Image (cartoon, rainbow, N blue to C red; front, side):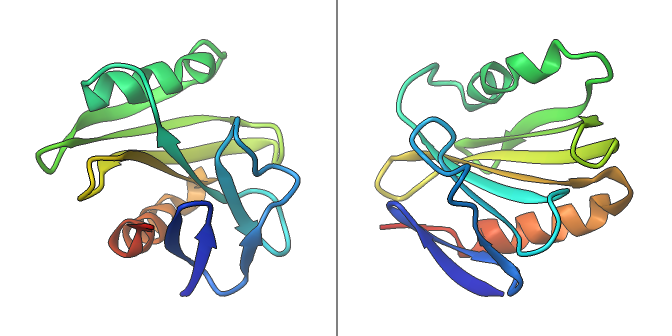
Amino acid sequence: MLHSAGPGFRVAVPDDWQLSTSESGTAVGTVFRPARGRGSLLQVYRVTGGSGDPCEVLVEDSKGLSSRDGYLRISLGAKDTTGCEIVYEIPDGETNGTAHAVGRLTVASDGSRWVLLGVGPAAEAKAVRTRMAAALGSFRPE
């Protein structure tokens, strides 16, 4: 895993992934994708408003997706003492398949709130979970 820096953080992404400059910006945070292909990503962004309840933040953030046909929430629940995780699947227009997503809101030691969202083909759900575990374990706000 290569440690990549985004605005205000460091995180591990697979060696063949890179910053997606066409997608990264203030509205979507920072997006990393494989150098080849578009079916997977890791998105990182800071939460600056919204509810104090981390699960409510994730539900609100996924509201636009949850109204789409084919959206399936698999789970939503508290993680650690201050975070929350949402797992869902949704039709993926990039691959004409189904995308598996794992979103985690985490609170840094300085109190800042961040969301890490890992997405990949539903057939590779275990790989999505593995990449998310590496990203969460390495994530460091700066």
